[in-house]
Length: 207
Image 1: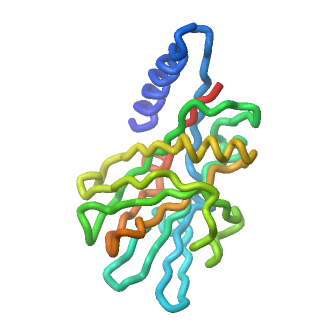
Image 2: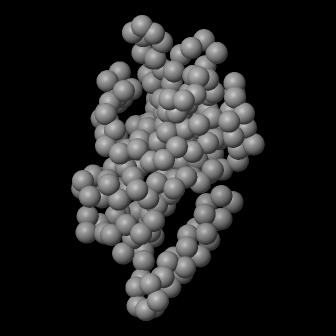
Image 3: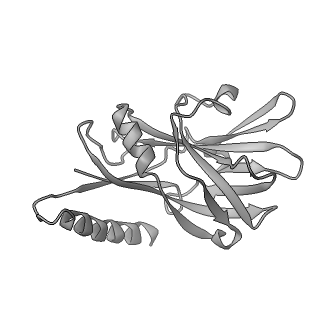
């Protein structure tokens, strides 16, 4: 049902965007792609120097935040833009109009409000390494909150600025890192990364 609902929404979005600009001559295309589960994962860091890497094709989820024991997790999602995993193809010449991702929240614990940062990053599709935990982001969007009321619901997150930068850099994958905002001391979010019906989904409108 989610896929049908999303495609319907994208159709409405396409019509809306096509009408923007007043002239009525512009036509925006829309692509969608699921995140690449074998590449997705998370990294847990426990001071002073312990890293644990989990892959989404084993756990069926990714998590970020700080747990009750003080381990900090950061979640990584990979969205191919070249159609290599069966999703839409974003031409290198495309001008980005809008982009968002939809995630399904499995759980929010230790805090009812989890302030979140979302980075555009680059990490190997062959597997995460400990260096990816704190790699310098290419760009970070403004902070936003994930709430306890989001549990068992889909959340749509605007990633237009990150997609514009990825396109400017000519990246073939939109790679994102979720982490707890530095102002927070606790809070843990688990994002579903299992069945296609609830896997992270990227939607991009372009011309």
